[in-house]
Length: 352
Image (tube, rainbow, N blue to C red; front, side):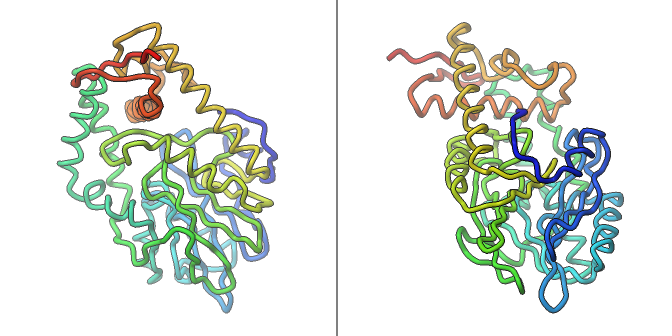
């Protein structure tokens, strides 16, 4: 969702518009932004942040995909900042998705760094990146209940399996707790649990430096995918909106997101995102009202997306369907729509 934000990462934004990788940048004294490429993805890169520690050493916020290209970008970025991969003492992972967590294990192997993750994401590691049979079975049932046509089920159910090869499975050494300080020399960082994009998504807040490292929770140009799926909490959009409210009034001069570019005016951006979801909820009510008894998949096909549906790859179609369901769940909880039956479930506007 394009919006009007106060861009502080102007070099990053220009690189985004030019469709090139932005440079490694010193954001503040002792704080560096390192773009790490994501293969075959419209987001193009994840912004890894390197925090210099008192007395030497580095902590990373996120790590990137486990590919050789990403590894080279990460190691050369740390070198540009004046260090080496062996200096890394900690990898603070905002959430479990491969572009954030994938390289964490490889970093630990190279440096002995500890890895931190929230327990609600850590509990999913084995089923997502290890033995995935149960997850695949659950995804087939989930997509069938959403009304995905039988001929499309395999494409959508297996769409994320290629990502397993881009993750080095690594159990975390530290489990982050909401509102608890993180021990990093020279840094006053606090974990803020922000479920929605994933159950265990966290942001990191520095009160004295007035910075929020926001992961995927708040991005400057688009909204993160908030999906109902087999590994989500029951009401992810409700959780996400509460998580937005939780960080809205933090004292911040700058937000450091994991994608795109740095920005200011955190409350203004959160208000934009909240308004976007309110508009989407109304759009879905209108679609269901015009087509009573439609499935989540049929609703998804009738919504406006950022590009034509036939140009959206299967994994992103699955995410879109999950996002539609997240809105439907919230509408159900508010009593505005209801579903009948299963395999597939049919949606109706509720009478008041």
